[in-house]
Image (cartoon, rainbow, N blue to C red; front, side, top):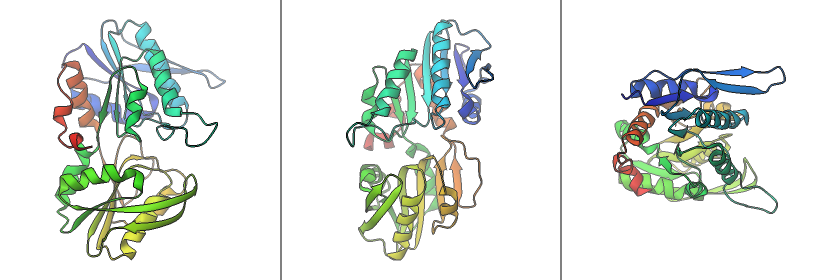
Length: 314
């Protein structure tokens, strides 16, 4: 591959960036992070960037230092005379704060977009945003990828005899519906009411799952409360088996415990967020080859949308 392209990694996504660089066919760029005794840190690129196309891989899940490190790296690359600086953000943090859902709250996703633009980013590559409209928060190009490119082939290989796609809430109906249409299967929906964030008050099923092999589709699993309740409800209503696919395994609180004790045959996730645990019920599919291919297409000015057949349905 061309030496014009340089792929670097923030501290939070080094595991994924290494695989992306390997698929692309170049070594991961050299950088260090100096840390002061009070906790302040300073990233530093250890090779020339002048005239290069710099791709910085960093998911922005908590802590907030992950986002700050990405901003500092973008600023450093711009000041080092990089030709363009592309932020590859597999998981875009604060994406759930995409609107004012009550008075006197921030729109965190818009603020993150403003900060990235102010830092000097030329382009953003991300995957399965919690809300599609976040693309409009940016004044630079956004390449929004879909994890379906890795999930759909896996689901097909399972050869489930009575496949039904399901959404764990009404907000994910469009996403699950696209999977159902592509897989030529039926669609069922869980309707839930929350009393507060991360806590579901009641849930009901819209559709028939009796004798079906259900696959729940979601972009984020956080505490796993909703998804495991949805899975249990599927089995209580006569489903033969139930699985879940999720792009971003946030897995906070008791998420892993809930998944291990759930009725799921399998929970299939991508590696946009590193998992610091193992579970016999969790299958991790890597998005590294997908990101490497998109980086190559951005560099050579090739079409991206034409490469993802499924994405045109979302």
